[in-house]
Image (cartoon, rainbow, N blue to C red; front, side):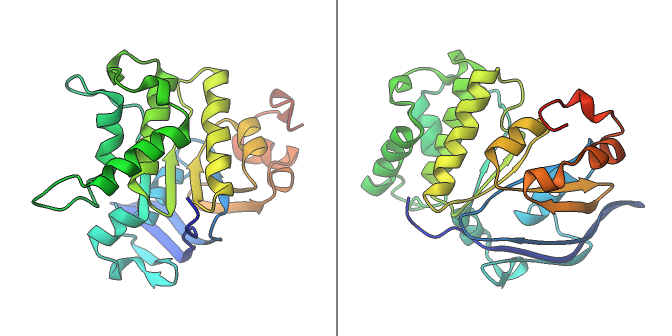
Length: 251
């Protein structure tokens, strides 16, 4: 995976649900190949920002551009081939083998009449190898551990071949070992040139695995930059309303 990652730019981005302002005046720039994490308390607007950036929700104000092209001018098919979204833990309605789930990532590329081609099957094999789950081939995803399932979902996104990988709470419900496995994988994918954008609640993990953090509170960007500059004791106290001593690795 050597293709250059996507550049993301937002200007004055705002989002309103009914009378509730969810995002306001969000200016964001993400370099290609950058690994960036959105942090903030519940209701800060993190997931809503991801939805705006991936075209799932149309902002109420401002703009989003990918590689300098306004998001509104990018067709749905091109968007699906450019952005790989890792869903949260999902329950499949029926048994599916690992390679079948990973192959779902190739749907945006498949021929509408002939289906999967050799290049699609090769992409699935490469994604499984890249994520390190070759040993899981042939197994029913429903019988895997939560950590293993999350790796399968990441492999599905890798097979999709997007230049931007988006993840909303990719480590939720995972034990520490699987959290580290998933986040280490994201670091490797970023080093290959992929732009990685994630939402995390675990501040120590976010600070360790991501080069840059964006701290949101009440729909606004409070701070952005290196983890040690963003997650200061004062901001932990002001934004999260807790004593920073409860986050010892950041105190």
